Amino acid sequence: MLELLNSLVRLSAAMTVYGMQEVQTAAGSVHPEKSVEKLREMIDSLADSLSSRIDDKRRPMLDNINRTLDVRSASDRFGDLVRRPAPATTVQATIVEETVVIG
Image (cartoon, rainbow, N blue to C red; front, side, top):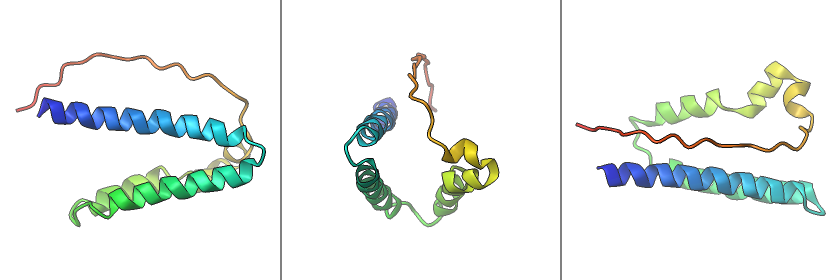
């Protein structure tokens, strides 16, 4: 079970870092609008593929998470804070080691 949890954490970390990498690449391209749209379509396709495998009893959880994290609704609440381009920033991550005991 610990190996499975480790695999899930690794998948989440890889997707996060890959996503950040691709957003930076798209934003720095000659035609950022086209690059961003292509990246969005690819990410949505991956999300749809995984979402289609989620059990019906867990679908409300996914829908709730998606609603909560929807940037479009956040932009309605926070206006220009979300819509305006942000200055380039450096993100530093701290890795925390924890022991997870299951069962």
